[in-house]
Length: 95
Image 1: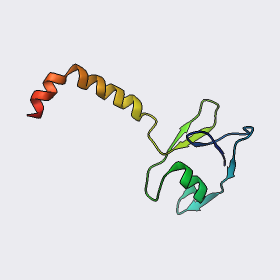
Image 2: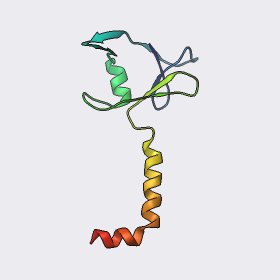
Image 3: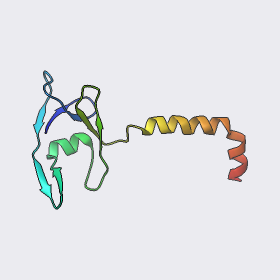
Image 4: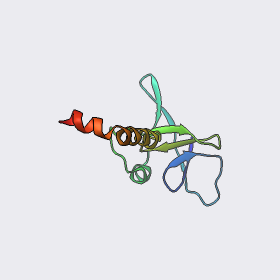
């Protein structure tokens, strides 16, 4: 697996001019396969042991590894819409 640097994340891609490429080796961990992230990748992702990372498909056919839930913004927009529409009801329920 080859990983390339973008502004917010690292993701698998064939070749991006000027991008930093980090080679990862797939290893066996018990009955699973995994990769060990180098210190510079961990630092760039701003993550730590036990923290969740999200692997999503990128539009170019590769993969993107990010430290945040990519669907979170959509979920929060829906929650804010509900809170705005039902503000009075939620205020009464909070008492």
